[in-house]
Length: 201
Image (tube, rainbow, N blue to C red; front, top):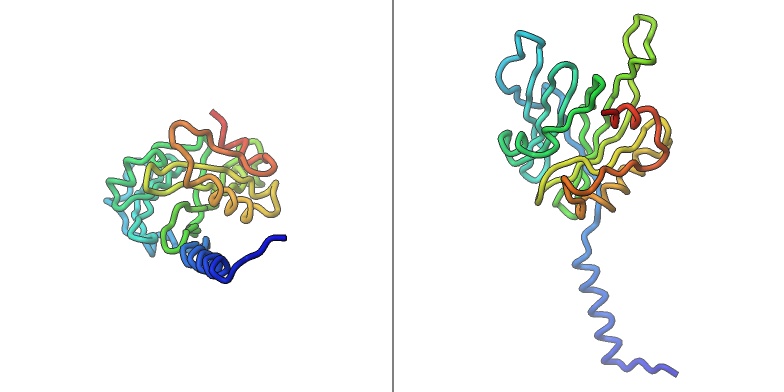
């Protein structure tokens, strides 16, 4: 028979309270990268209309959106220069693409560790009535500082009805321990056309 003394019980209860106090809840908040909520950097290119803008994020972080030749990059840093130097700022999807203007921030307590954003990837093999390519949706999970900023996981938004939940779980499970430049981006859930297009090389 195991006996728990009053002293032992007090220690156990204290430990439980401390553990609860130290535990950080993980949740989501949102910001916008719509042009009206951002600061445009320079003027649109006279050649192709390409643009760059910097948008306020969470916890002092800024979101950099750069568009060139109908393709976008999204990166994060304390300022424009820092964001532009991150691995995420050097990653382009081959097909034409664009990112949604809502950014979901996953945070432990008040410290964000990943963002989730919906992307539209153009599918040239699926034209609309005007001959323009229809797009396929994909969620991109990107890890945040400390450490480099880079893509961690892709979730096909059409092939997975629970894509948002899968992306949040991927952010929570992988982002903080992901090593940019060494670890491979994880394809989460069912692999659909959007992921196939985004990973074309």
